[in-house]
Length: 134
Ligand SMILES: [Zn+2]
Image 1 (tube, rainbow, N blue to C red):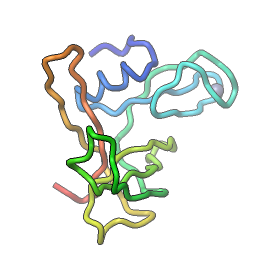
Image 2 (cartoon, rainbow, N blue to C red):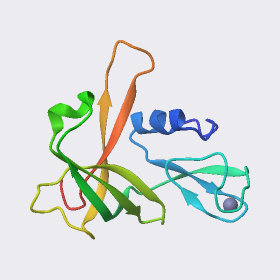
Image 3 (cartoon, rainbow, N blue to C red):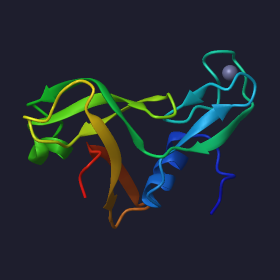
């Protein structure tokens, strides 16, 4: 496992391909960010390190997308939301729960789709499901 990858979005998705949800922690002020950033927006420090999230959290806000970009049209309607991770970072993502379950405060956990493609690099996508789903 290579934790020496640069704190970029590309690295973030490389970790997703390994089913790991990673963010960055500012060594100067302790701010935790997801997706990762190389510059801390709170104190301006560039001294950041990788931190792995448990992948659990709560739904803070959401909206339901009916007209999706073509890549996601087959999934529409679907919900996207902001998840407050247990560690405190706020991560936007797709929320895959039934419409009846969709509510603010719902306990969620992360899951991953591995995308296999002829094109390099192959990548992965993360989304959230109910915390108590198998
Ligand atoms: Zn900072």
